Length: 388
Image (cartoon, rainbow, N blue to C red; front, side):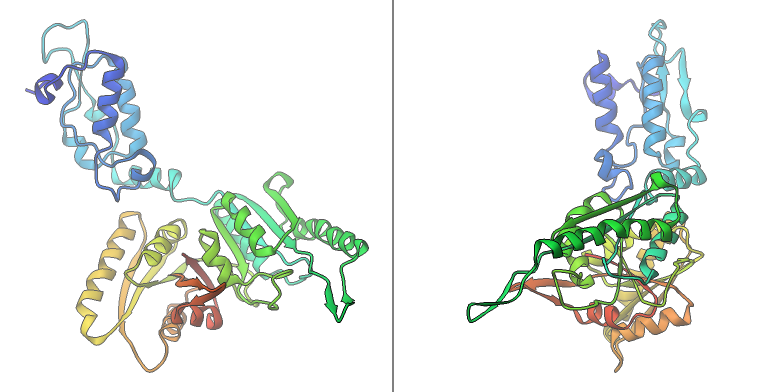
């Protein structure tokens, strides 16, 4: 016979509020890596029995259970509701095991619906650019997830250039008006390239440093798309894509000049057991679970191969639990750079996306990047997704 809550926990749940608190406190007490943990503060249900609840209470508990995606083991636990009109313990109980579907397929669909999606794609556009590469890639991603897209552009006013008391270069009011008009007019070009319904496209621009404006606006996006190539070293008019990745705190897809679409059907994950790589894998989940094949690779020293094998297997199991199809590779450091090895494997796998962490930091106002990060930014022929 199922033990009553009062007997099991030493106190009676005598009011609706107490019962709600009890359910919440005990419902979300699972492992910290559960997908719902960040939103609700916990994971799988740990209670084995709930007795003494009214039918109305049970409805609430059932809703918590289904929204929280209880584990399949929960279906084997006794969740009992007792009609308050029945004074006999154990009688009039309703077994909820048949009313809560906790199949693996349902959990997977629920996860995709609640967590594994992209709702807003943001793409940066240079005011003077005519090439459509990164804009079309952003469009293909937004189409894949049936989501909205935001175009971003900006410029900052350059200070007057003065030499020996003489103004050599200055920005006149007419120049400023012309540049503002160019940014506003770029919206129609952007909308024409995207070719989405009007309500699914937004255009934002401002007179501000482009990198700063993008960093601030990225708060409203799930994913940011940038050109991989830096046009000029001019912070007043252009963005350094590597700097943007480190500043924004958002997953970023960097697009080479010749790429106009991202299928993300075959993806290579460059693994390193660091927080950046873990964040990159988590950020890429919406794409990884929809890919037909995900290849996880770690490049290590000859003495670390066994440990590396274990790490990539763990990552594969994590992704497989979300529905991804994975394979793993471990490679040893060679004379060629790690970035080149990763790029070569991506070509062998016919992948059009590489996912990896971005490594770097600011020192004395300049951004210092890791060797792998800089190598991938300079050499990758396909799209590159990075998180920092």
